[in-house]
Length: 214
Image 1 (cartoon, one colour):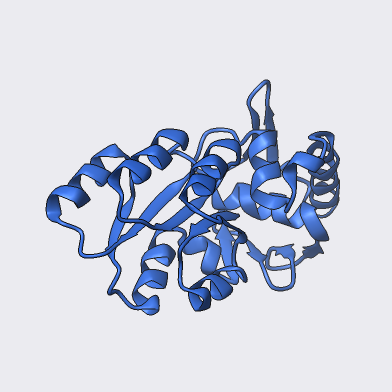
Image 2 (tube, helix red, strand yellow; image 1 turned 180 degrees about the vertical axis):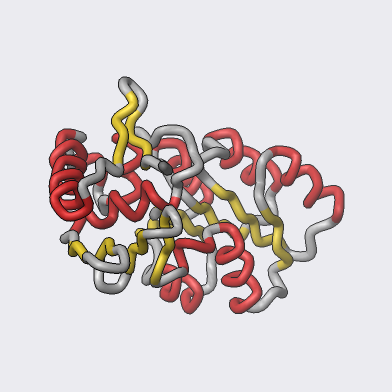
């Protein structure tokens, strides 16, 4: 999953880099630009200008991107306006790193888990990069595991496009052909079907991929 930050405490950013592919904006103009040209699962920005905050909210797809603003002493009017425009949370800048992390975990809870249950029968382990049931286990390497876990984490959303998968998983998505998604999807299907006799990923024509929930 991918994160865009601006003006955020280095200690907090360093921790987040263990969980998200992280882009750090040089200034607010850079943050607004990146929010338009890349998919982000989370945008975390410290900014007191409501105009700049509104510009970011105009650029993002709220179905994909959770936007959290950190503001110096935000008024209720300021907070309500940003929430109505699509921000998922507005946090006072005096809040501790622990509070901010707890808020982010509440938004992307499965992204912080080491083991994620699926269909009450299977589990994916993000540390050992495995997919298993009570009897069998398959290890998936590199981007194949990242794609599978991303689809499972977003299992209740509409189909995920190739473009979103590239932006969420690859460090430099602009340098990668979307054909690589098809290669990895086929690798996932072949490995899991061989062991579990099921096709876990559905291709939705012209829209992308969706995990099979049944």
